[in-house]
Structure formats: C-alpha cells, structure tokens
Amino acid sequence: MNAKQAIVREPSLSYKQCVSSHPLHHTVSLSKVKTQHNDYCEALSSLGLELIKLPPSKDYPDSCFVEDTAVVHGQRAFITRMGVQSRRGEDEEVEVVLKDYFEINRATDPATIEGGDVIHLPDRLISGISQRTNELGTKQMQDWLQVKVDTITNPNIVHLKSYMKYLGNNTMITIEEYDEHPLLKGINLLIIPMEEYYSVNCLAINNTVIMSNKFSYAQEIVSNAGFEVISLEMSEFEKCQGSLTCLSILF
Image (tube, rainbow, N blue to C red; front, side, top):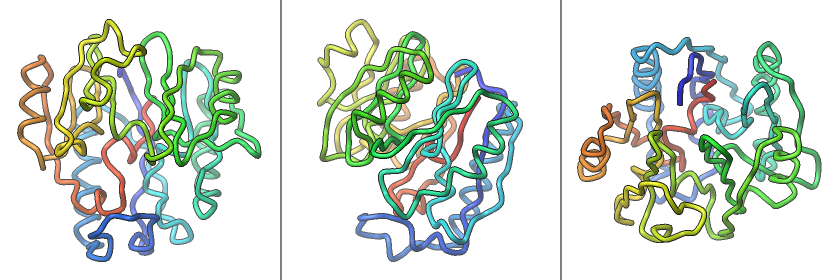
C-alpha cells in the first residue's frame, strides 16, 4: 500500500478489559503495551507516514484497534458498525478525522462490519463473513465504496485478515486452508503453517512488511519473496486478539 498518513490511537488505562478469549488475556501489561505501541508508531514514522494520533479512550478498552472502525477506498470512507455492542462508539472520533479527507457514509442496523475483515487488493476487496461481519455489512460497504467486494464465509473466525493479507506485487500471505481458494487464483501465495498463523496479520507499506517478531520462519518467507521486513514485539496486542493492521488506518 502506498500510504501517506496513518490514524493511530494509544491504548487506554482500560485496555485490560478488551474483548478477548486469549488464554493469557489476564496477564496484559499496560507498561508493555504502551512501549509496544510507541515502537509501532516509530516504525510507521520511519517509513515516511504522517501520524494522526487520537487520544486514548477509557470508555472503549479496544479503541486502539482503530482499523475496525472504517474502511477507506479511493475518495470515500465507510464507517463501520461493530459486531460487538461494547465497541460501538469507537468510530466517532475516527469519523471526525476522515471527514477532512473523504466522503463519508455509515453502516446501518442490522448490518455489522469491521475493518479487520476487509482485505484490499488492487482491483477489489475481499471481506470475511465472520463473527463480526455479516452479508448486509459487505453489501452496504460495496454500494458506498463503489468497488467489487468478494466474500469468504467462516462463522468460526473473528476477522478474515488474521488469515490472509495482501502484501503488494501480486503477493499474498495466508494459511494452507486458503492455498487453492478460487478467489486467490493468479496471486502468488506465501503459505504459513497454522502454528504461525499470527504472523499472517502483517502491515505492508510500499515494499516493506512489518511483522510480529514471534515467528522467524514467516519473516524468512516474506523476506525471500523480495520484501524488506521490520519485526516488532506484539505480545500485549496478541493477548487482546489484535495485531499489526488492527492498530492503524492507512491512507
């Protein structure tokens, strides 16, 4: 992605109350998560992005995961309607920022959709139909953004982007389950073993890919495909079922 700006939001003091089924959720360290978020922001800045920083929100423990609040394409932005009731409202300050750059529309009840389900490709979007996103949400998004949206249904997952991510140069990182998926035909697929699936959610900016430092094999695969790799510690975000793309909206 050729991005110039990134919206980010610092984790708040309520971050430990995030929506998560991760077995280590109770061990979240607020000091570590702040350090890891600072390192993330520094990595984005080092790649030339201008950071638009929103203040932390104690009312919304998950609000650092700004990606879920909006989907941006072309000259338009689509404000989502979260699949989890407790997260609805995180989008309000994000919308204020996006109004300065894009035409805006919103998902409406009973649609649900979260940005973590939406994969951006050069010619289309792929959206998960998941625990957080329904078909009406993808339909409303497609109608407003005026772009083709293909869908992959898996009611057992939170977000599709945890299992596939487009990196650029006709290359996608994914898991073996999607190795022969018809929607990915013609794309160079980098297949990651399921035990390293957390590394799939990575952030591609130009020819650089920011990845979790947890899995060296996945980093090697991406590096061998011709990308520069930056690795970051993401342990405290993983405990809240978040990762690299979750922490920013790029445009």
